[in-house]
Image 1 (tube, rainbow, N blue to C red):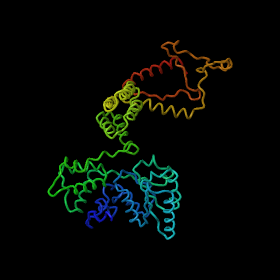
Image 2: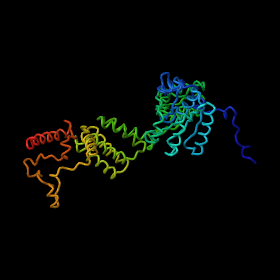
Image 3: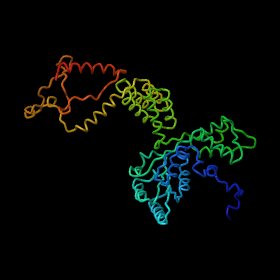
Image 4: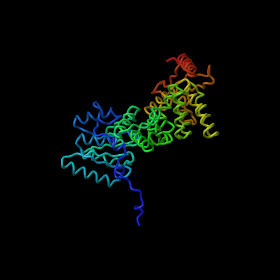
Length: 438
């Protein structure tokens, strides 16, 4: 006997009820919330439709920002056939089938908008398979990705598609979604003002998430009940921050940390460091980035910066987590409050460029050793002056290849310890002119 006979009967109206996020899907591009820079009256997509010419595009943005919905609406408003596949569930055979269908449709005079969700999950060869059908107009490709296209998509594919950035919902657009949800449900959310703001923060910029959370609240509410912030947290469970070390959140936070240090803002730097600890970032990765900041943004303005960062890394190795995190925090504050200089960083880039351009030039013979009689006869080492035997331990000789002449790459600023270095360089430049007039 089937167990289905004993299953509780679900009312048809409940079984047929679609999720709130699905019921609230916009019907036109103008109804889309939070992406006005793309879908608004003066938005990029609106202009494309008005021009009657759509090109292939990559929609890049966080989850729950409307990428799939916008692609579907775009096809409808442009009069295109809509095909959708997911890179997670599709392979080469699926792609061939879709391409063939699009070719047949094109022969009947109708073009296809092919929406590919999670397009970054296709490998390089699979991404290349889109190129011919994009070039001959068989499909207008709209790929959606949560990852930075510059890192995850072929250069050939990117050169044929325009990247449009979808923004995370701000508090205003999430509030607008909640108001629409209340209108369609014909009842207010049973939340205090403070709890409502907390629910919006929990959604973390994800429109689908805020509607799902709202649905959970309505399901859990008993008649006459209103939740405060504590009650809300108990009912829906606060979500962990949206962060994936393999995705863009990782790069965004480390970029914010680096720029806060460079901008001499220790409070903001500590905030981003704490956020990265909170979401489980590898502390030794953070230690390596702090070392990079020490050599890129502080440099010789404070030579102790590199020493402190390496000591913090050793302290973390010794103490472990969470005690060792304080050592990294100390290094972070030291860097943010240190005098800043990228003079060595800039000089090294310039020297590297010069090395590429003049890599075939030999050093001047007077600074080359002459281990054989032949080399000595060729003038190797001739005229070299040993600096320790010269006044002030400085000969002022020229060490660049003769065809290059003297170059200046390192220009220390009047900040921190580099002020002293600048004085030395100016003193040596003066001596060089006096002892080697040309």
